[in-house]
Amino acid sequence: MIRTRILLVDPDEPEPDAIAEAADVLRLGGLVAFATETVYGLGAVATDADAVRGIFQAKGRPSFNPLIVHVGGDDQVRSLTTDWTDRAALLARTFWPGPLTLVLKRTPAIPDVVAAGGPTVGLRVPAPTVARRLIERVGLPLAAPSANRSNRISPTSADHVLADLDGLIHLILDSGPTSVGLESTVLDLAADPPRVLRPGPITAGELAEVLGVEVLSGDAGPTGAAPASPGMLAVHYAPRTLAIRVSDPAQLSEIVWPGRAGLIAFQTIPDAACPPGVARIVHPDPRQAARAFYRSLHELDARNLDLIIAVEPPPGPVWDALRDRLRRATTPHVS
Ligand code: TXA
Ligand code: MG
Image 1 (cartoon, rainbow, N blue to C red):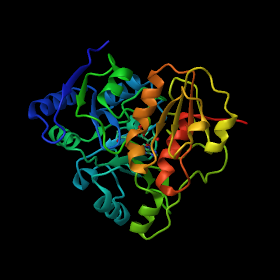
Image 2: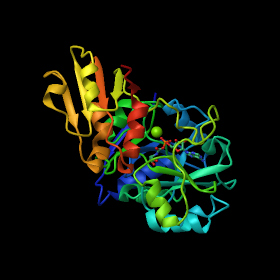
Image 3: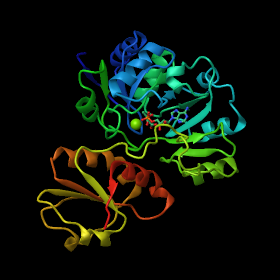
Image 4: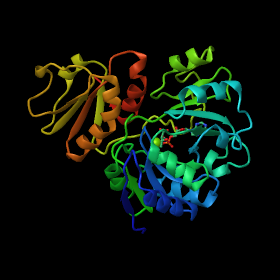
């Protein structure tokens, strides 16, 4: 068992001592959780295979699921990929730093364990000052999946990280809640046309517009084929509480409500649609919903309810990422 330390850092003016300490832990092969704009990441030096194995161990993550590598900028990227194409450069110019992960062919600088043995690596430049100073100070790329136990809810605050990983990691840099709240869009640029492997804050439509080419999204692969993005298993990010979803508020009338239940929704729900004692969380604005989604799930999960009911967001690409995460966190209600 490791003693997990927590260092408070100012998100705008990170204390140099805290950054230096975290960088030392990383250089010695340790694990440090830090905030990105999406969720907290669990970082290790990406070129240190032993340190990266520690991430898989702490998370209980299956070894077939590759990790995203976080870099400081384009220059650092070039030694990690063999195909820094015009498309990659254009997207990097437009969306980095930001919540976009580009999957490209990897060089031998990326250890097999990071790539789960595959030919590619996912790369991104995170935006927050703390993350950027940390990468700069270490001077090496950082592999960092979301800082939760595998298959649990992603962390958007240091408390969430601690609840899952206390005693399993060395350090948490606590710079407050994350701003975007849902994981980055993962785009496969090794494919032609490019394909969104995981919907996220940047939509397929926005990517297509910048690239001027078609961008595929959704699972178009043959049934039974291995998922293109190996981490995208159907059930993921799940709360401990039984959580089911309906696609339309009208279906709430079919629910047999237990004594203690919670509701999470993304549009106005009529008062009469659920019993008075039900804990309700409603986030009608897409950006605010993204920011608050995992926190809301953590909160409902902590109440020891008998049931969580989720109502899917309305149609439309701005809700794609949230709809995707909601579906992975819940099982469908069958009438
Ligand atoms: O916003 C994010 O992306 C956060 C922050 C910490 O950067 N990270 C994150 O990492 O969500 P993780 O490990 O929880 O999810 C990474 C996703 C998985 O679905 C994984 O399969 C996919 O990215 N991925 C990573 N490398 C890949 C690769 N080379 N090819 C295909 N998919 C890849
Ligand atoms: Mg994750």
